[in-house]
Length: 381
Image (cartoon, rainbow, N blue to C red; front, side):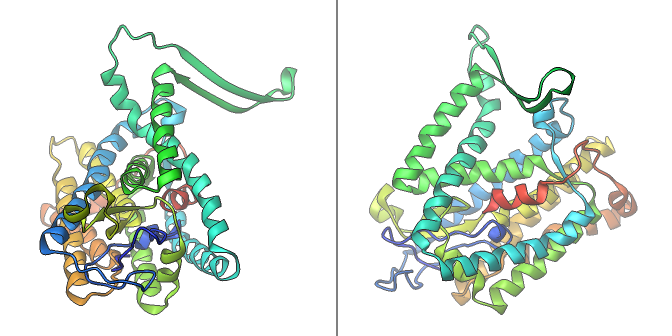
């Protein structure tokens, strides 16, 4: 969902819920502040900088997450194997997302918002540290010199003894992973204490990149089912009810990217944000990553479908921002992103005579999805 709201420093930053992933928030200038105490009119320069930065940040996890998804699908390491979303998962995802969204709505109506967000902050602190650490790991492997003493470690929990011994947790890591974990923990503490928008964005980018990398659609048909279902879900909860906006205003977590429209006036202490929910990045992103793997499977040394869908995403996101900015009203971003990201590649496949081959292509990731829907929700919450 793209939403137009100003968020002053004294109010909780708007976010979408786990489910909101599929419908997230983008701010517009000159709209009401959440605490209804002031209005802020962004300058044209500030608005352009904020929207341009959001678009750029949205493209980063999609591009690099798609590239890493190709490597991930070939990984022999069980810890790096992707979760595969089947057509059954895709069909029920909008229903699960709707139930979760409405459940959060009721929670915020019944219980204290302060205590709920306190629990969510701790929860996302743990998730964010792990996600950011995983994101940084390949970079650290290149930075550290070959002479670096990289010791190997193993975290092993078992149950029972003798022949009946059963592994509960078996996690292997090294010194470089520990360094990544330490840096990520510093960012996590910064976010917990200050809720600073830069710390929020670091976690948000890590969540989005991990989602695109590790959540794999098993074929294009499944991608169409998922995006089609969330297309309806996004439109209904944004235009049909006030549930989405209410939860977004109440929910405080790093499940959106933000950029201040008053950065030029107030610097890093700026407080009036334009926002883009992670669902508007991850949901189209996993489809774009699938098309990159399809390009690779064709063995034609071409990335036609990947680049066409990537450009379609830019077009769809730009159209979302334009409509929202013009009408000063929250917009379901998937209303524009889904037709663009699906339509462009399908038209190209039709002209190239590869439409049947595209829909027949199957992702061969070895791990079936039993928890991917839950993981996906957590990633976007």
